Image (cartoon, rainbow, N blue to C red):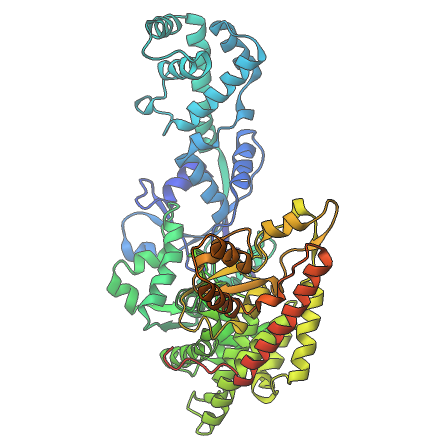
Length: 638
């Protein structure tokens, strides 16, 4: 016989909102279980819910789990519940009650009300009616609440109408006369008073609205499965969030305090919305937070945030309440699972000490980060944090390769023969990195590519491209991505910093930027110079890598029009430098830019410019191959 474990009740919205507060006055208390997901509804979706309630439309039900054991344990007369389904709707209701004025929009104004106000102000044309609409909406949104003590009074609204519709100066005697006259206009006061009552009354409509509440009293271990079934067709969430409920019983202590802090930032995002969390009640101080056990989902969530913070060259920044995929993907790939089999991760790591596993993971991340550091470290001046050129799965494949080369997948012990393989990775990995990006090897989802790359240890067993292969790949990349002809009016001054052009230039200029923390990007023929050369109707290739250089300091190259030889010629003519200085500086500037002065186009035609681009591209390839022969060793101090 199947026992019905669900009771149906009807609660006013006010009761639900009181129950989810941190100090409810009623007989029920609703808390948020730790497998609940982040808040994902947009403001427009929250507003749609409030509009549905105001119009008397159905708006769904709430599923609660009554934790009878907890109520008996505390014995304070309250009934204790977990919110299993309805987090997004509850948050929308909380937001409305807390920021009710912020939901008021221009469309909420009745035309009859606007017309009546316009008549009483003696300003009935369309321009003044638009002013009235804007003044009233801004005034409503500017109130903290619908209480008189926060300015929700007809006198305050009258003042806003004078200020923003009639636009009288407050210092003038006329202002006081008009204010007195309008406040004694009985028709206007009735109109405004009725408006204030109707707007504030809408909150009571929402708070008094009845919401069906389903109360589950069955076995608590069934809750994660119920949660998953209910959320399978709801708002789209990341594929990692499905494990929040599935892994609820897989718990470990966490030693890393920064990972614990990242986990609690996620919880705090819910608490800031006015919810009470089970975990917050169970861990009310730092000591309790350090000593409690966390789910594997929470651990990998916090680990991903930690990776983004500590290794900005490798992983993109993450949001406090949104799970970064980095921790999940990295752990899964390192222990030999396909990303599609991530659900099996708890079983795969069950026998590992979590702190030891974390140490092995981080050592492998540092190893790869140190290899890539020489070209990824320098940032463009005044830019955002490090640009990310690679896909996440590509760098995970590299880290997982380093992990499996060194550590046993059985017990995490060191492989005694790993040193030569690690040294080989140090020599080869940086060139594999650039090759994969220019060859676009990681386009698409990459799950299977990741598994195959790690399974085969491709970055270890595959030799780096030969010189002939590099020439072919570089030319294929150049002619497919760089020759982009544009009109003068559509010419962009800069290439987006995360594009592969900058990455290749970092390799080419690596020796010149070896001691630099930041770099400048310079056009050898400045864009304004190019625009001046273009004839009407012509299309020129503006932002191509063969017209760019990276410099530690901009110096004289800040000139936005003249080429470096023209700039020095002008200095020579003005007497600022001597002939000898001119010749020395010309050679020095050409060396900095990797552009001999005789490469610069003397004619102003597009053919001359295209010839310059091809000649310098050949020079850049030659310089890159010099770097390739050295393989850019890893930075031992990283």
